[in-house]
Amino acid sequence: MNGQPKEIQFFIVYRLSFDFWLFYLPLLQRIMSYLSSFLSFVLAFSTTLFIVTYLFKLPHLITGQSALIDEYYLKHFSTSVPIDFLLVFIYFQIGMFVIHQLRVTTQLAKIGMLALTTFVLTGGFCLYYQSKPMTSSFFSRWFHKAGYYSVIYDILLLVSTFLIYDYMQKRV
View 1 (spheres, rainbow, N blue to C red):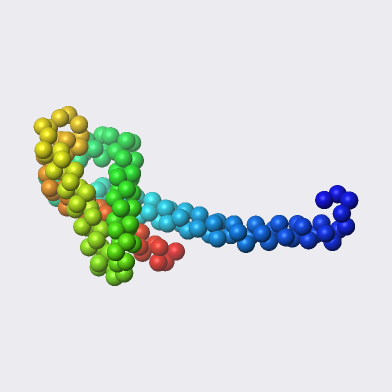
View 2 (view 1 turned 135 degrees about the horizontal axis):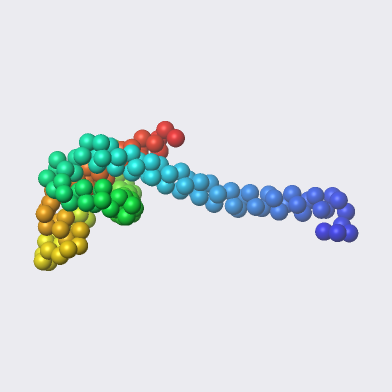
């Protein structure tokens, strides 16, 4: 750009800036939308896990497996919470994919589809683990001892996370 008149330099800089915003602004907006959605999920999951699991101790009440739950959520907190986050995130994404593909629009239908997706996934894992002999693995012991009550707990966890997530998405 050296040796060119200032008007041409200004035009080139202006044009490059315009091209950048024209083509990359939608990409940046999409990235910010994904980031906002992910942060809403993190807050929703954290709030749900604290209230459902630690405050109200609902998995204890639903499954009756206090020793296993304390082992998972208290003794192995630093590994179990990230694993739970990942599993709930995957279930949530699968559920949201199903909701999107079926073009579900009402809140009650979305909750039903998320519950059904969770039922199929956790029920499948429960069936799989119960078809094998129990081992020392936590999930083997969990599905053998808690059985299909684990499905109820997972549905409660996912639906609660969805409700908080959806509330945040609509208001933030």
